[in-house]
Length: 222
Image (cartoon, helix red, strand yellow):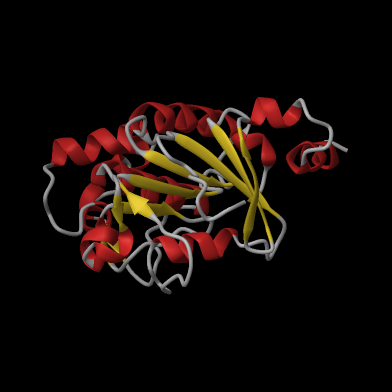
């Protein structure tokens, strides 16, 4: 795909797929400007990311990784490290991510200590904590790296509904390991060898037996 083609322009939800080494992670690295790109451009609201202050840029992007990251401190500081939100706002996002019951059951609730990346939460609950953190930020861009892989199907369905509702004014990039998680995206971006080889509505790609996405879906269902 030519550098002049727009990807993820005016998109709400875009699924990113590709084999290991196709460039999915490199795309995210470039978005955060962990490395500077030497061709093409990435724009947010029409502004090239190279012209945005690095701390401001990263503050506008949230990522919920497959391996969730929690910081030493408390549940409260993990949700709101800058202490900008009141308790009602914190409990609201915990309710939306189906974590409120668990946190209320802890003796110190929001002030439960988190040490060495552990706070008595399961891997799936830590993913939900990262999601709650992203909800508080109201980020322009939200990256989900198989963000609900470790939670039970019932909770996942509820959380997916929350993601669709709460991030409807954001651009959501979903790095898919399970192709079923992106079938309802606005667009699917297929990568190979660091390049975008397909960018289209999933329905249209699945109607074309010659598309790479069609072949990937066929293989995953076998």
